[in-house]
Image 1 (tube, rainbow, N blue to C red):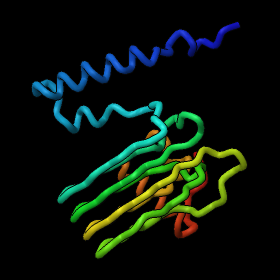
Image 2 (cartoon, rainbow, N blue to C red):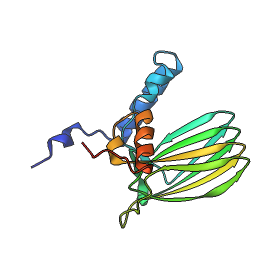
Image 3 (spheres, rainbow, N blue to C red):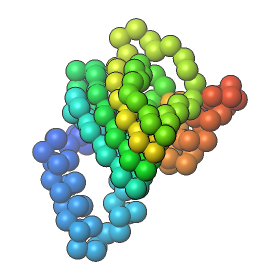
Image 4 (cartoon, rainbow, N blue to C red):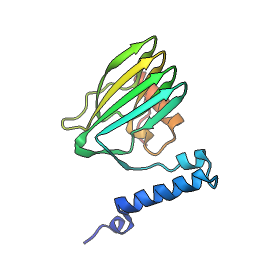
Length: 164
């Protein structure tokens, strides 16, 4: 017997086509950037992502990412800018890099990952900039980034509400 949700699944090619169409609509003004950014959900992340923030900000939401091969290397470069990264607290987070007149901050519960958990290798290089990583609990699934930040802060203080 097949799962009823199988009939609703779309292929990677169909997802890519939809993203191209949405991007085209945003480019000509039919969608605002805020409307375009509302379309979130599961996506397949490549094994390496590079992000650069110069005099601006970058938000990288990995809460719904499917990591190919169970591992992702995220390299973030900030110059007088900021990067905010959201990762589920169930992944193993390996952080490295260097800051000069800048900083790197982690917010959220620091619980050990389960054996065999996906690995996110975060490398931050900050020059007069900063990178903030929010280790987001499962209760933040499907919520906006502001609420995800609030829950990660509560988790870091040991005040996380029970899943509901």
